[in-house]
View 1 (cartoon, rainbow, N blue to C red):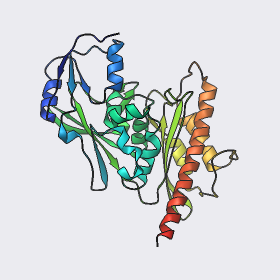
View 2 (view 1 turned 120 degrees about the horizontal axis):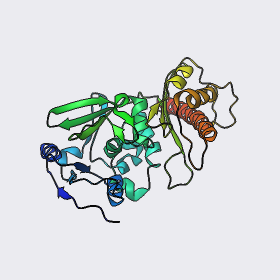
View 3 (view 1 turned 60 degrees about the vertical axis):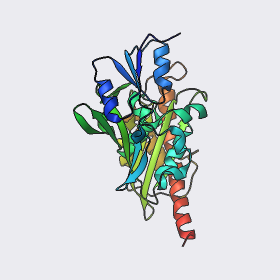
View 4 (view 1 turned 90 degrees about the horizontal axis):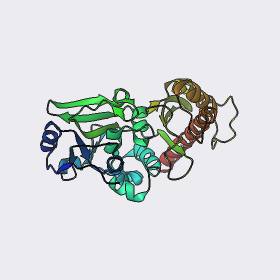
Length: 308
């Protein structure tokens, strides 16, 4: 099926792009285009104008400023496959997550920021942004504004981005040196969206969890942060290493998984997964991801000792 007729423009500056988005027509932004072009071919989207931002050099930029990573709107998923692309544990977390996004040709073209433009509940980046308190930078004819991830997602494919606004970048706080990170995704087939995925970051002091951050993918109608599960972990002892399998019910990670599934998540039944299965999967994946993060913390501590 071919998309409905549309006009096409290629701005060379952010100002030109914003002007194009505000010329009175129904417009869509093209960066990677994987989701946009599919929706246009299915005629679920019928823009009058497509604004191709791929010739705007200032958007193809990634840098660290004041302990904050700024990722421009044209930085491709593929960049984050190397853990060294981003400093410290944040780079490791991104590298664990990005390989779950589609497949290599898509990752070579699609963009991190495009995920925020789309706002899909199954977006890996969006759930990580919720867990880490990232900020979304937007530009319009009225000027620039910043929206915290926690205020950005309103529902399936619904976000705080207004008509005529362009997302210019996403800002991520870097993680402390010994923060343990984990990311695990569960899906029916390799080509399906995640039934559940979990991002976790653990800050540990003297063997005790000082802070836990947990992001949930496709566990509600929008990306979530598992606040209730996080609270149960604060002050818990890290305990001995575990792979997250066959955890006793009293283990802090198993308990956090159950709380995430029962209190934080709001999943819907799917054709291949009823509600009971989905909650069970959430509990299991949360516990395993926390175990992965704890083991990552131990590895970072051991490496720092060996480097002395």
